[in-house]
Image (tube, rainbow, N blue to C red):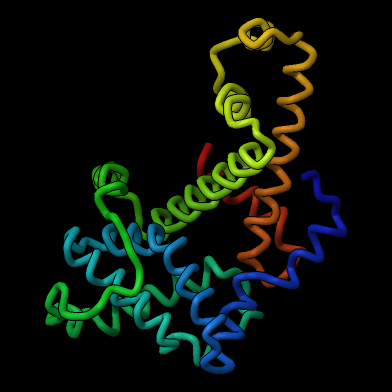
Length: 242
């Protein structure tokens, strides 16, 4: 699963911006489905941003649903230029515009009055939101933190799926704490628990980290329009989750 630099560059031919541009071009069902998928992936940063602006949980949920409904219907894609940079930056700017432009209209929208286009569970993020509100974190920082957490969550999920595809689910669960240096057990102890040497564990952890970095680079790369931005974006997102 280790991907060389050339493969990483080639991955930029298909990015989230590709989906946005394709959705701008017409009513392609494939582009529409892909855009809907992006909405399901990235609703948390939008919700965090809106909540940190001072909106209640219920109002923020409504505004988040309304924003992505408008995005899927392409109301916010007409003037999008992928040369503007990161998909992350576009989504934050579009959220700001939507909340400012649509708040009064959104307040009059009855909950359940429209069919929800995406499924969101705000309860799972409210604990983090409450902490951010208590610390008076600004909305833009909350958005970026939630974005970084989403990228990390998806990277771990894809890494887990890779191990599962190889029939190594138990090995993934055993070694995952070692990935980011959070394990309280030594490599020797882990090896003894499954009957292998310390050197075998070291090798497997090294390979797991290689796989993790490759998946992370692909995941972040999908949100950028320029391959040259990749390393800087990874460093920035990493600084938010340390």
